[in-house]
Image (cartoon, rainbow, N blue to C red):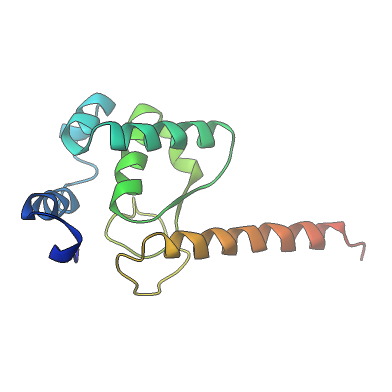
Length: 137
């Protein structure tokens, strides 16, 4: 994982990101959602994890874009394993949950650009499918 020192005030957040990015996602140490939350984040991870759970319950896809969303997704899946069905890897990255990514643009720290592109791709696919299913052949 590449991080830039200029983006943070000290090395501690950078070191934390490196530590978390090496974390074994399927580790039994992170099997319980509360343990995963305590180990990987706090409120900044709990809120997106709740959003992920709500989206999954509503059958809305959740596009993962980097470390923060992957941590939230991990916590959500530990809480409700069925939530994994809603996860979509927007791009190729280290934190993929074994998902096949929609895009491989080799962008790093793109501040959500990859997720926006992946979401647009999903929306275009849905629109195309609706248009095709409405045609009589």
